[in-house]
Length: 167
Length: 173
Image (tube, rainbow over all chains, first blue to last red; front, side, top):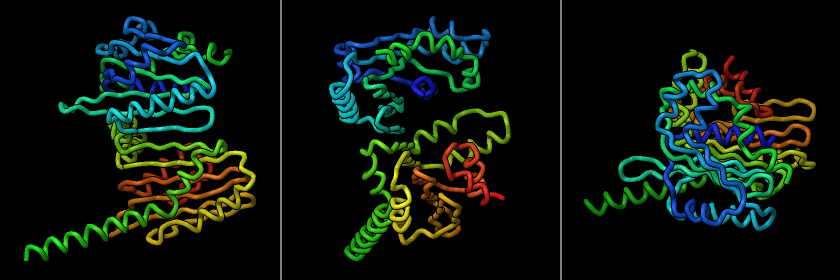
């Protein structure tokens, strides 16, 4: 369940246009004591399982994806998730999609600036840990069909899914 | 004359606001009531997210049809309860609560399950579809808001893995 959920969330985030860093995200980067995973464009290119040139076009303006989580679990993590949510909302982000149940929570937010560019942040509560996904750069929607070339097995290898489950 | 215009505008605004509150006050509170209940999952999707889906470039005509249906949605809320012993009781309570402006479109009854579909229609335009149902110890509420085409929503119902929503396909036949 957590694998499909994580991949779904990542897929959702990758379809969104642009992330920029909010104060809340920056603070969390400085204090999060758990998993901190960067997926730079060069690494994402490795996930192009059939060397589809359109996949490279899809991510050509993508700088990185970042996955951050807390190390602590339980009520502390719940409070952290709540703080992340409040912080993002306090910066004027609007919720565009949310999923909530007792084990998994994911809230995706958007903030559009004066020039019409959008910033996106996803806050997460998975398996007792709080976290967030940040994407910097943009993906070219014209090549979205090439998303099918993403090697899901390799992606699962680099994501901290098993580690999160084991701890 | 100017005061009359302002008063008319004010009265219309108040009436419109009251109507909007009345429409959402029936079932909406159940989404809030049960979202803290561990047995329930709540999913909300805004119109903005649907508009992002609409940017997907689909080659297959059937998929294009679905994307077209999705692009007209302005919001979705889904509440799903699992292992809820009193699922039938909750269903019986909620199914009485749709706003008076909604009319029943269809109901499906079978042993251990019941689903009712309601719509809000104004001048031939359907602006909301509400599904309330239970199946054994599962209970679900689905609210779709937007410019709804029943044929398209029926096609969409086949793609959504939601208990009970597949019954909506009968509307498209």
